[in-house]
Length: 428
Ligand SMILES: [Zn+2]
View (tube, protein in one colour):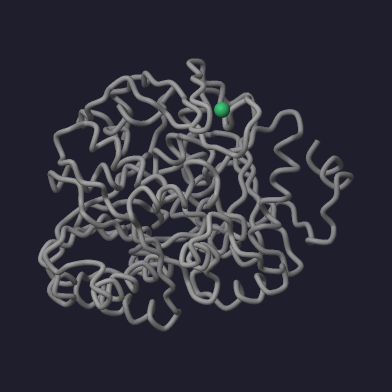
């Protein structure tokens, strides 16, 4: 699988707060002007999307990805119109976009997570291997970046808390270019983010940037591009489970680009974003009409996170209030937020597997659980075009069919051992 066709993308970056434009992209993550937190957004030279069938994997959507160098092994989300689940739910126009492993549908995302759509454009945008890319993850993002960086020998350092360590696997052996740092001692995702920030500020490292990285958001947005170019129009409703909410923001940005394209309808795709009860900081804030997250003390947040099955949805500081973030995406689309319990998610996953024929990851099950609630609340009408983003699936199937390699931590730090001194000693 080679990149026979590759073309660097023509794009510029624009600040969503002050409108400042940046034509040179040196992995810029934030605007240099003095104002409140705001995202940059990529503006592409091509205003209409050409699907380059000759390009490999997701790079066929390269017109709307900030690409600067070829990257091997990029996979593609697969979109199709549902029959089984649609009939079970009584929906006449339900579409599914699936990221994961499902050979019968030509879905070959071997990490079984849509995070595998973030890594190729992020690595391509980085343009060189001079510095080590640093990222924190609840587990599945690291698995996806490890897969792509391994295949391309790109230096990567990942920081993962203990609940996420089980996520570090691949169907191929890992290359020496990827290193794993574990944070233990009752640590959560936020501790991993904290440590990764300290490491990334050292010389020789570059922070991946999370939601601030336009490549990451536009990579995720390829789910919507795949669905809309397959279905021929922008859906009325979009369902996805969220931890940081980056996927929801990305879907909104992709749908707006497609609307500006003009050939896929003039629909403002309504976002339906879902969190796993009882850890639902964005759902709580949105349902209170608040642009700021509601206060929650750290011990309470950790207690609630320990009760959710979808561990990847455990971000305590999501980009909710930032300009261009989750609040703006929901407000702009007249969106909704949901809270789905573990039991509701498990039931939804069971029905999905029965009716569609593939297993879901816990986070995807949370999204499927909300679909039923939306129909009951009549926020979705039975004849509306609905897109369900299955952000991960086929893992059970993959594990049954392939040998699995696990990545063990190269360095382990307890949460109470994290200090400037320790970071200097271990990473400088
Ligand atoms: Zn600015």
